[in-house]
Figure 1: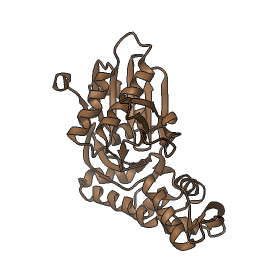
Figure 2 (figure 1 turned 120 degrees about the horizontal axis):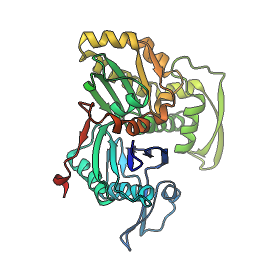
Figure 3 (figure 1 turned 45 degrees about the vertical axis):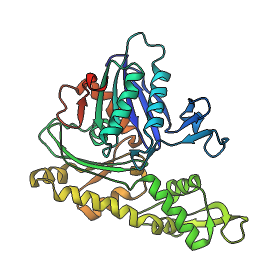
Figure 4 (figure 1 turned 60 degrees about the vertical axis):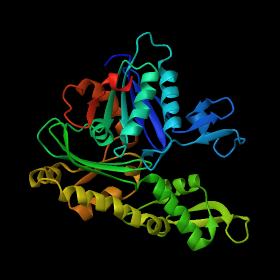
Length: 339
C-alpha cells in the first residue's frame, strides 16, 4: 500500500483516518466548530468537541452526522476536507482516498464527501460500504463463494450484511446503535428514579455494568446527576438489571434486523453462517452479553471480532490492496462526474 493512500471511516461518533504504512493516525470525534462571522472552520475533531455547548452565538460546534447519515452537508464536507489536509499536508504526491460511508448515505451526501476529498487534493477517490470494510478488518476472507455475516454496531446505525464471493448478498441498516442505547438509559433513570444524568454518564454505565444476557442485580455502580423535581445534585446506585431493562427492547431491534437479513438469505449461505458464525464489530459489539444473546436467539455461533472498535478502519486501510477483487460495496469514483 502506497504511503499516499488515505482511508477515512466517517462515523457518527468518531472519524478514523489511516495512512498506508502508518496505520491509524487520527481517531477523533466527528465534530466541527465553525465561525459564522468569518465563514471559516475553527476546529475539527477533539478540539471542536471541547467547544460543544460552550461557544458564543456566532460560533457553532456541531456533529454533521446523525443516526448514521449526514445531517449537514456543508459542515460534513468541511470536516472531511480539514481532516484530510491535517494528515496530508506534508505529502509531495496527491493521495488516493477511500471513504467508508454509512449504508444509508444518499447520492447528494455521497457527492458532498467526495467533493470534500477532491477539494483536499485527492488523486483518486473510492467509496466502500461499512459492512464490507468491517469484515475485511475482522480478518474474514470474503473472496470465497461462502457466506459470511457481520453485525457492525456503531454510534448511529447498525449495519447487517451477508457476503459471498466479494459481494453483498443481503444487507440492511437500522437506526439503532450506541447513541440510542445511551438515550434509553437516560430516559429509564429519569422515569424510574427521577434523576437526570448526562450522555457521558449513561455511556459509562453502559460500558461498566451492562449485561443483556444474564444481568446480576448485585453488580452495581454509582451515577451522579440532578434530581428532576428538586433540581439539586444527587448520587444514585444502579445495577445491571436497571441497564438491562433500559436497553433490552432496543437490543431486540438489532436482533430483529439480523433475523430479517437471514430470512432473505439463500439457504446454502445460511448453512455457511451456521458453521462459521456471526461476526460482531463496532463499539456496540462490546456490549456485555450481546454475542451470547444473539447466539441463543438466532441459533448460530456469534463472536466479537478482535479490536472490534477499529475493524472498519483496518478494513478501509486493507481495501486498497483488494480494489481489483471487490465486486460489490466498493466503488471507484469517476472523478470527472464531480468536476
